[in-house]
Amino acid sequence: MAKTFPISQLSFCLLFHFFLGKCSSSPLAPALYVFGDSLVDSGNNDFLNTSSKANYSPYGIDFPSGPTGRFTNGKTFADFLAKYLGLPFAPPFLGLSEDQKSETITGMNYASGSAGILRKTGSAIGMNLALERQIELFQDTVKNYLPKNFKAKNELLQYLSKSIFVVDIGSNDYLNNYLQPAHYTSNQLYSPVQFAGILVKKFKESLQDIYSLGARKFLVFNIAPIGCTPALLSSENITSGCAEDANQLVSLYNEGLAEMLQDLSTCLQGSTFVQAEFYASSYDLNQNPYKYGFTSRSPCCSVNASTAQCYPDVQPCQDRTTHVYWDAVHPSQQSNFLFATGCFLGSSQYCTPLNILQLTQKQ
Ligand SMILES: *[C@@H]1O[C@H](CO)[C@@H](O)[C@H](O)[C@H]1NC(C)=O
Ligand SMILES: *[C@@H]1O[C@H](CO)[C@@H](O)[C@H](O)[C@H]1NC(C)=O
Ligand SMILES: *[C@@H]1O[C@H](CO)[C@@H](O)[C@H](O)[C@H]1NC(C)=O
Image 1: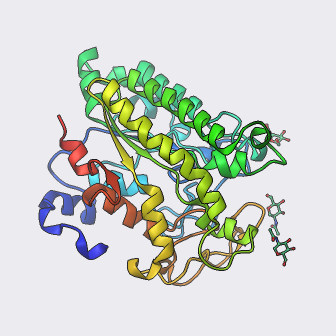
Image 2: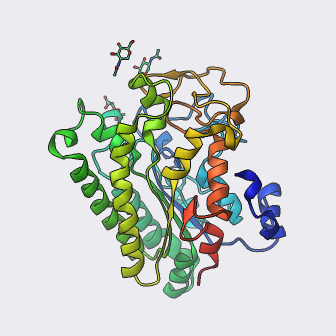
């Protein structure tokens, strides 16, 4: 895959942004706002009473400032996207002072480990910012903080309409809800089809709420093949391939999501919804790791089976670029890089119907 990127189409500035971290010309979008779960949390859970935290070593071993609360060894998808756009990493909202909230106009991150589309999701392991709550915090940003930086309402609306909104959520509604019958009732109350329908309906309302606050350019993730994660493989005693029963559950949701996003693109005036094909691209990566330069699907650190996270202070694997997964559920920085690069510049294998570079150029 890496060799098929249209590098010749990359502007010098893009390369400059990415490899040197700065560029004299302006960024490709005014801001990046991030909603989601541990796949893109940049540190919000550090400020919450939960056992779902990644603020300890060896998390962050490949991040410039060490452990930050990111659930991987280095950068997340959202971090790579920020770099490609020429923006700073979106800081965790809960970590900002009042002054910083007022001054930050390049985007913020509301994502929270263990969070889901449903409010109850993840509650068995502590607090999180459920998607609804994340949107309330974004509303707070739009109503109380951002206006201080703009002379007129119209300018703020222009700014929001050109900004990129990433929403990467839903796997916890399965991993930390539907698939945990000891802690949640959803599995008894709803069939897989019904549950997927409930998620899609609720998610649609949430996306409409973000649109109502001024967002126009969306990147929405479908759910990864959770049955391929080391955590599910070991809980089902599977040694090769994937736990297809779990994959089938999330596929029901993914089918509904694709339809729902097309529907929203048509109904919400001026909106563009790009879907990140996380399922298909990650499935291929799990089936053919060698094709992408990986040699292992095992976690890079030794994990606590009850949390699927690395034990504190363990020495992780030597070559972290050859592991698909960092711990038992989260992709390694290298996987995040491949996916972000594919979605930013690549073909519809990653992001469809537009890549993010095209999304930034859309009027
Ligand atoms: C944090 O959560 C635990 C478990 O739910 C609870 O026992 C504890 O009182 C909470 N601590 C604070 C400071 O709220
Ligand atoms: C997996 O294997 C362990 C140990 O061999 C066994 O105790 C457990 O019941 C098995 N689990 C499943 C889901 O088959
Ligand atoms: C694994 O995680 C659980 C839940 O946080 C914790 O209670 C347990 O002590 C951990 N096990 C080890 C060996 O650290």
